[in-house]
Length: 302
Ligand SMILES: NC(=O)c1ccc[n+]([C@@H]2O[C@H](COP(=O)([O-])OP(=O)(O)OC[C@H]3O[C@@H](n4cnc5c(N)ncnc54)[C@H](OP(=O)(O)O)[C@@H]3O)[C@@H](O)[C@H]2O)c1
View 1 (cartoon, rainbow, N blue to C red):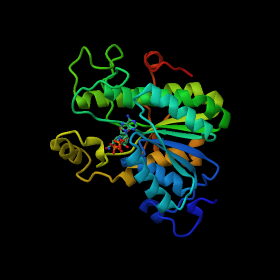
View 2: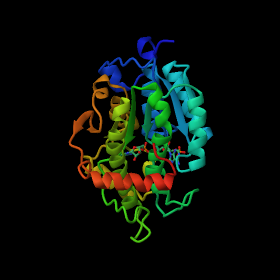
View 3: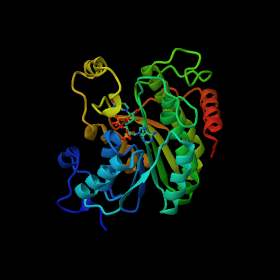
View 4: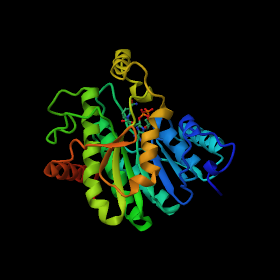
C-alpha cells in the first residue's frame, strides 16, 4: 500500500501540515526503540506517516500495544508492528534481533530508548541501569543488526543523543569509583552515544550505512519522571521556559532517519535539522577505547 503521506486524511505531525514534505519511505523497514512513549513514539508515527514499514521496539507489551493501535489508526499504515525489547538485557536484544530479522530487511534503526534514573540501580546483566540502557543498548542493537543492515543497504542508524553530554570516564563508566548521580550518569551516557555514533560511522561507511547522532531539543517527556520538580523548572529556564512537545522533539530524529539529504553524509551531529560541528569526534583513540569497553560488556562486536 502507499504511504499515508500520499493519501488524504492521514493525521500528520503539525509541522508537516504547515511545511509539507513528502518523504517516500514505502520501501523502507525501520526500527524505533522506546517507541511506547515520548519522542520515540512520535518518530515512529512520522515514519509510519511517510509510508515506512515500522517496528516499534517496546519494553512493555501493553504500552507498546497502545502505541501501535494509536499509530496505525492515525497513519492508516497497516505495516506497523510491535515487538518486545528490553534494550538493557543481552538476552532480550538477541531474541529481538532474531525475530525482527526473520520478519524482513532492516534499513533504518533509530536508537532512542533511554532512562534517567533517580537512584543507582543494577540491571538484569549486572550493569548500572543508565549505562546498560542508554549505552550498551545502543551499541548492542546496532552491532547485532549490522549484518542484516549490510544485506539491505543502503541503511541508516540514528542515535538520539543530547547536547547534555559530559563526564564520560572510561575507567569508571558505571560510577563505581565516583559518586553516582542520576544527571551525571545520564550526561556521561549521552556523551558515549555520540562517540559510538562516530566510531560506528567509520565502521559502517564501507557498507553504505550512514550513522548519525542528533539532539531532539529540551522536551517535556516522561524522561524526567523520576526526577524532582526543580529539574523540569531548571530545564524550562535553560530552554527559554517553553519545553518542546514530544512531536516537536521528534522532528530532528525523523529528519535524520528519513531525509534524502542525509544519506550522502555520515558521522554528523544534528541539532534543529542542521549539521553542527561534532564534539567528541576528534579523539580517535578514545572512540576506539569506548568501543572496546562496550564490545566486551555487550559481548558482541560487528
Ligand atoms: N526529553 C528531553 O528533553 C531529551 C533531551 C535530549 C535527548 N533526549 C533523548 O531522547 C530519547 C527519548 O527520550 P524521551 O524524552 O522521549 O523519554 P521517555 O518519554 O521517557 O521515553 C523513553 C522511552 O524509552 C523506553 N525505555 C526505557 N528503558 C527501556 C529499556 N530498557 N528497553 C526498552 N525501552 C526502554 C521507555 O519505555 P517505557 O514506556 O517502558 O518506559 C520509553 O518508551 C532518549 O534517548 C533521551 O536521552 C531527550
